[in-house]
Image 1 (cartoon, rainbow, N blue to C red):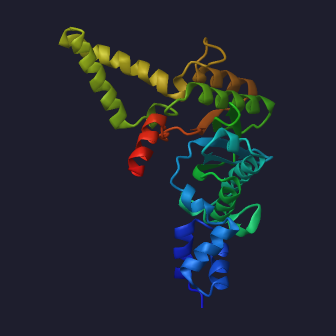
Image 2 (cartoon, rainbow, N blue to C red):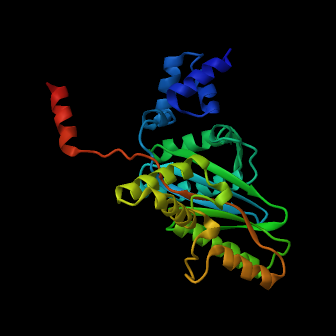
Length: 307
């Protein structure tokens, strides 16, 4: 009898899909080592050796439902831009973004254990593992997000062929072409200006206190009298808000407007308040440390191993 624990162990050792592991154990009468050989011969254990490689390339993609009420976004990574352009890879990314829009997962770990939207006979993890075996590169579903709105709409924007992807959720009692245009403009703003926060209320208290301390030290180092340092600090904090808060940023398409002023004008035009409820911005590979290969060092290491 093939136990669940044996399937789990084989899966962990090879990176192959659950059903493939179960079949391998059945074919080899539960012999773990023979099962590993079986999977390697089938090309299904290829993922195991690739799991440690840095996957910092890939694509970020979005999906928005036809009624603009539900949306998903995903970062799907691989090792090279060559594989990132592969049709099978981009198709899987699009399917993952669509699945994210309806997923109940609260983490990537839960998400990859869900049944794959394009093939309910396998999980997302199995689909990724199969593509790893086929294309020969490590791949990871790095992060996902899901938006859903009742009054308003969701719009997406993708920049640089999948380098940056943005979802923006607007709140409004009216949904027409003007509001759709506003959503697209805000999404482009997020992509271009990369705001850290939606508004002042969203700013992390520790972050602002840290900024204040930096400004305070800067002012004192400039030789400013202590009695005016606090005024200078407050002025610089106001400038910080305008740089990092979306609604206070200067609109990239018209520097005479802030985002707040732009929203106010468009709200008057449609006869209903337009608000930015939330947004998310994924940039491919951000925060991933790419392994820099030094050819001379690599040759030296190999020479030492030969000795």
